[in-house]
Image (cartoon, rainbow, N blue to C red; front, side):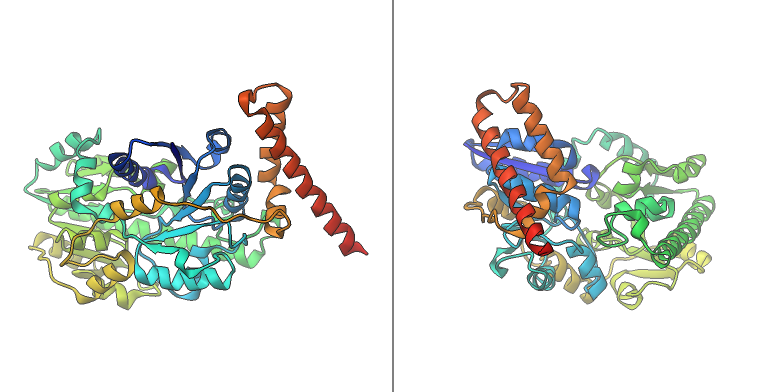
Length: 450
């Protein structure tokens, strides 16, 4: 029986995609066991499960790459990196952020599953440059599961909030969907550090004053933007009381339990969705969508929903964004924005948007879109993991890292307390392998001192 382990990082963003892939695999084979776990909380579960395949998001920080390196050492599983990032640019800084500043073996990740051909080409080139992939052929293009309109419908209809949300929306003939995504406004410097804003620094004390000032300016910009953005939504709701405004919080905001949006509960024609809920469940029900350069602008296009883009003029890719939305208004154009909602917003074909949908998501208006089937096939048929040599420096780095030491301590505890069961020999052999690698590290260090 084949064993597959899916590891998610942000449950609100990734779990539903993973669940759809799981169901697709099970519909094609009974001879498979699948588990879904949270990344950092389930390392012990992974070791005990001994999967043949591990699927996770890209290991773009040292913590996740160390964990996955240890998992490969201990399970010999095929490692698949499945992209969860959406609408992004391709300038050097963005690509570097997506790839990560950390280093790991080119044989750690066996396959990278990406959404679109341009993403695969640009990120693939960077992965090769940074020696994070052994062969360009290991990058696969599949599309994005949440843009599969027919497939997502069955998923959201069983969502526990579906009837409640749709019931409220039926009170209004016209509905406006408003997207948020301003969690950096609530982050502290420590949050920016843990989320990789300062690169691959291992200690906050090593972050320069200049880097901290840059983080604080980012926080200030998001705070200012959110204030104007939400104030305009409130002003529109106050003037247009016969229109229902559905405000959907970003998955990260849901996960962080941000209280800022509580102020919207004062308005009877504003409904705040503060739980993880797929946008695809809402788009067929609304007349227009308001956004701030969200990936969902492209998703709305697939559903034929016109969009209104709000901006403050500081965006690096502003001209592109203006061409990719049906309507665009700066945050200084409140009354024009409200008049647009009051009038009838019509959907328009946008060549630039369709080009971007293909480049980023492999989507075309004139063909069937089945990304879940593709991803499921890649995962199920994955065979022959690349092996990382015990003499490779990246493996040694993972073994002596905090993540490696935590796993070693847990395995030693299992062995000494007799809780290994039938896997006693496996745990013993794994610990011997770890000790051998640590000896090699000491030998290298001694040689460098000579």
